[in-house]
Image 1 (tube, one colour):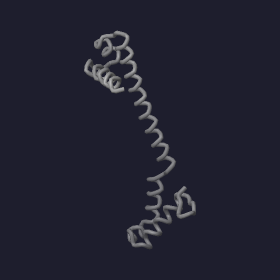
Image 2 (image 1 turned 135 degrees about the vertical axis):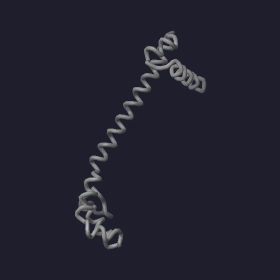
Image 3 (image 1 turned 60 degrees about the vertical axis):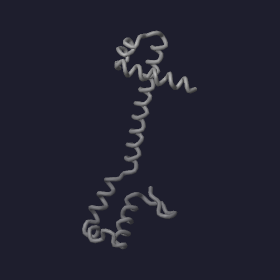
Length: 115
């Protein structure tokens, strides 16, 4: 739903009203007079709030999963290191390069030193 002052209106009505206002104000008036129906349908299909919000939630969910998996792998690398695994063993198990494993360990150690 969209709001116009205190009045709530459905999206399609809000788009229709915006087109009417643009014509009155001389904003793209020639185009909108000729193509009003197409502009209304195009805007309605291009922006669907429910679909937009669903898409945003999906993106946020996927980013959260990815960050969680990264954090889990970092914890796994650190646990192996603390349990005496060599850098080579950790890299092989975690499917990382030795340099990547070293970077994770060094970063964690620098965080521990600061705290």
